[in-house]
Image (cartoon, rainbow, N blue to C red):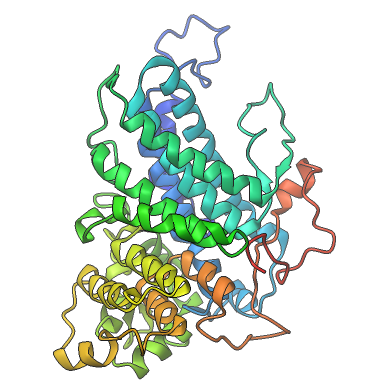
Length: 438
């Protein structure tokens, strides 16, 4: 969606950054390019912009691909039939890289001048954002990116395996920054942090939880990473109170709300695999996730004040369940059951005892990978991570709408193909596979 209000929050803060100086006499100074930008302004703008990109365009593309939603009108009919062009990914790529550029500036400056809490948060946000970017596109620019117009404007593409090392390193450095005994040189974040209000202990829990997520991905090719997950789970979230959600309360509306307001008929929520699973299971989460009567997004994500998920306790428990299941740990079922109940609590529903007995009372004998992933698929409704799980595991089983398979990768954007000779689109299709997708 190209409606300008879609990015109104992020642009509002960017406007604050680029405002003209009061001293209009200094005509030789470029007042639209300030020498320094305060971290509190950058943090809010970055969280808003990245949240809109991942919770908006990326969530919709991934959601069509993994059939949590379906395209119904205009260009979304083409997307539903996997008819993508490189230009379709221009906007989401641009906004993710603008956001990451801000984060890079925040932690580079912050670690240099002692603004250490902002630096730590920026590192953790970079780990999450970079993970979403590489899981969607595979090889992407990182190590030579963010050098500005005077630096390398055609940065080389890093291999996804090296990007995964960068993700883990960024999360580790974020934890180290937030654990630093130096303390903040400047004022610590508060209301300018849309996720945790500057609570560094919560950010540390998020970093460990994200480390578990990305170890689960990389374990597909590096089996030793599976054993690293348990320690990260222990240090990660311990309840829904820890959930990392980007708040859009008081703004012009969360991503899905704005999309529905402008283009509500473009997408169907009832004609989806997610609806089929919830309907067949009489899942108590159905009505809060999907407005069945009007075939719209349900109130949890479809309200003006709805959040965008970075990561949740329910996801972490599902990660633990899968890691234990793959390792032959008999307690995998307990984590799976707890994940379902945590998801229900997060979405504000209370399942009946009978439903819990049927769907959230697995044992070491009855638990399967399919059950873990299909329940996680509902817990991650509209979260691009569900598309990652499908590509890793094949669950839930999806029938392609057209052609020989479900999309497994985003195309590199047209703007990048025109300006940076690095990406190799030749031979790349939506069925190409990323590094861990083997």
